[in-house]
Amino acid sequence: MQLLAGQIVSLIALAICLVAFASKRDDRLLRLLISANVAFTLQYLLFESWVAAAVTTLVILRIVLARRHPGSYPLMGGVLAATLAVSLLFWEGWLDLLPLTAGMLGTIGMFMLRGIPMRLMLAGAALAWALTSLAIGAVGGTVAETLILVTNLITIARMVRDRRAHSTA
Image (cartoon, rainbow, N blue to C red; front, side, top):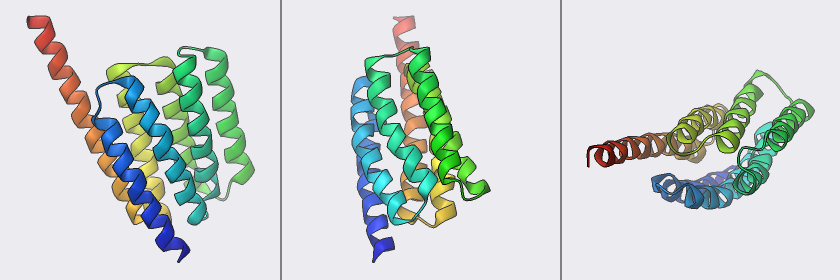
C-alpha cells in the first residue's frame, strides 16, 4: 500500500511539473516547482529513499530563497552545504550520488542563472532525479522526471525560437 501511495503521489507531482516546465515565465515555473517538490518529498519518503527525501525538502527551501535572493553567493553556498550535509547524514550507498548531484545542479541553476541557462541546469537535475526514481523503482517518478526533462528541453527550444524571432524583427 505504501508503494502504491508513492506512485500516486508521483503522478500528482508529474502533472504539476508538466504545467511548470511548459511555462516560459521563470516566476511561474518556480512557484509550481514548490508544489511539485512537496509531492516528490512525500514520494521519496514512501519509497524510503532518505537522501532523496532530504534533498528534495531542501529543494523547496532553495526555490523560495532563489526567488527572493537571486545571485546570492552566500545563500547558494549555504544551500549547497546543507545539501551535502543531509546527503552525508542519510547516506546509504553510491545511488545517493544521484539526488546529491540533482540538488547541486538545481541549486547553482536557480541561484545563478535565468532563462535558458537555468533550464539547462534544471534539465541535468531532472536527469539525475529520473535515474534516482528508476533506481528505487518509482515508476511514476521515473516517468515524471523523464517527461519533465523532455518538456524542459522543448521549452528551451521554444525560447530559442522566440529569441531568434525577436532578433530578426
